[in-house]
Length: 273
Image 1 (cartoon, rainbow, N blue to C red):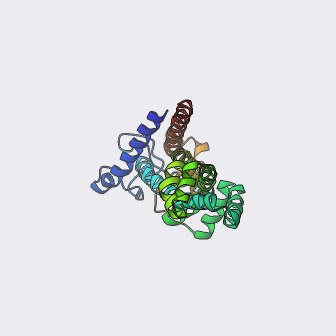
Image 2 (cartoon, one colour):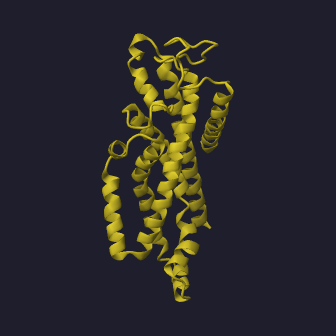
Image 3 (cartoon, rainbow, N blue to C red):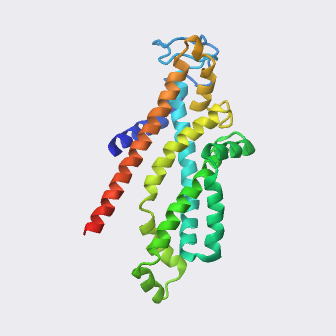
């Protein structure tokens, strides 16, 4: 499953990198321009995936949307990772009042439904790439915090931490040189699974009209526009964006499950030794 997920991610990464130059060179049509095209044209050699209600090429918008999805999702998750991991280590290592306050804050955020919290934040921040990434970032910080905090609290009781403290090592040195390498092992699994979920959440924001500006191709917004035409037999405007989103989520899920199985196997092997 991990190999399938890696190949899916590679293909989407190549599409994201090549879609922009292909549009600039005229190989693909501009995803925002469709005045010269017939509206709701069926898939043909001229338009492989057909056109939408504004005459825009569905294939161009679907391919361009891959780069947008990867950019927003991974930007949000990397920022969430940079915030959640240090806070989790700090909370688990220091304990006391700092731990209680951070746990209370993160548990409050964690109890809120992911899509609901994202919708509220996206509504408050407005449309835009940074705003959409920020709305997703806040949602996933508590997950990294909880994972890292629990592992830090467990590793803190090990003898090598006591030895480092007896030799005069400070909290920053211990967290950087001893705790980080021991608590970071399960984070890649959470990252890939969160990425799959974030793609769906971003699509949900776009479907509700709260994600990205209209000038930026986005699968959720295209699905929302295709909804009205679907009962009339115009299937292509919904099929290709939906299929692109489905395959990306499936690939990221496969990658996460494969990494989880590998990490569990490594842990079992270490215990056996």
